[in-house]
Image 1 (cartoon, rainbow, N blue to C red):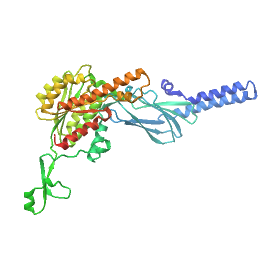
Image 2 (cartoon, rainbow, N blue to C red):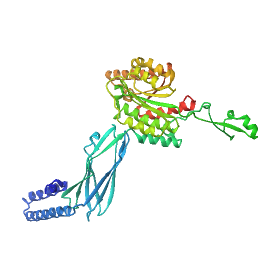
Image 3 (tube, rainbow, N blue to C red):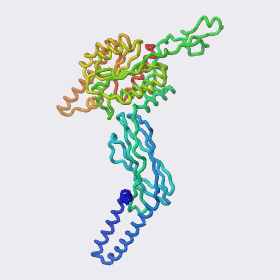
Image 4 (spheres, rainbow, N blue to C red):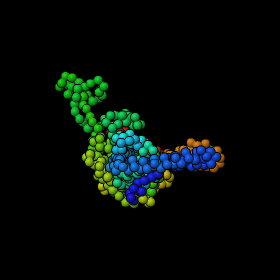
Length: 444
């Protein structure tokens, strides 16, 4: 009996029917002939209520549903969640579907209404976009089923609570991998870099075909074969590449609901995958007051999974990063000349100058690229028209900060440190562009 009352809900139309009956009783005060007819309608309404309850509860398993979700969700991407529905009643039903979403989404108005014919199966698909890594707990799938009378609803609850883990954006990683395999990276802003000369890793001697660089003609082989032969070169492989992520407070700043740290994590995963496809060695290092985690560079495909697992649960703290300790660890643990991608953020040129000596020291032995971020909120403020004195002050200060960002680029380049100033949304594209540029120029 307790289960019966827990599953029984009054449909919204029930109150409409009650309102109509009440209105007829009111009108019958002036039109007495309606009084008897209204009482007949009341008895008909009571009978219909009983019929509605009987046909809803006559079938114990009248409806079934199941949530289908991946064990892993991709951070900052649209992830599809599917719910399969099946009507086991011998009549058409009207349903209201409510899925209990994880608290992180802060969505309290999830509801979907539809109808299903007898024996019909259907799948309802919706998307969720997580902006934090970690464990997300889904609740139950609640289905409120009504007959064509729509006086009462019977609640069915399915899919016991389940947890899914949100990992760095593997969807973004797969997207860039697919584009790289089909040489379509220009569709997402990847620049085609003109190759300057070639690297010196010899691959083979082959027959000359129109379009080959005549500077690579092998004259000895040509003389032996009595036909033009050319040397074929390939990019140097197995170069160590490290993504270094600052876990200090500067990476807490959010843009479009996503922290700078998460943009850096997504970029690290996508970039490491491209590096492995190019047969280079991908590694990772995170640091703040101390070096938190380090994954040695390797060209094994399994290293990408290791990096992904290490990135899953890292977070920022409220301290400033210790670049002196970073330099000491790089000097001790990374002996071979490597490409180092440093993800950090400098809001003031004074902050850059405090760390510049350490960046210069790292750049003497390694190919260092310092990545920091444009403040897109300031860009919006700069583009707005100043309509009063306060707006003029705000716009002037915003332009000053934007100008300082450009000065930082010049300061780094002057000290032989490569730099990328990027909008958070374009981070992965710009980092991969820089990597491909270095490969084309034979710098790594």
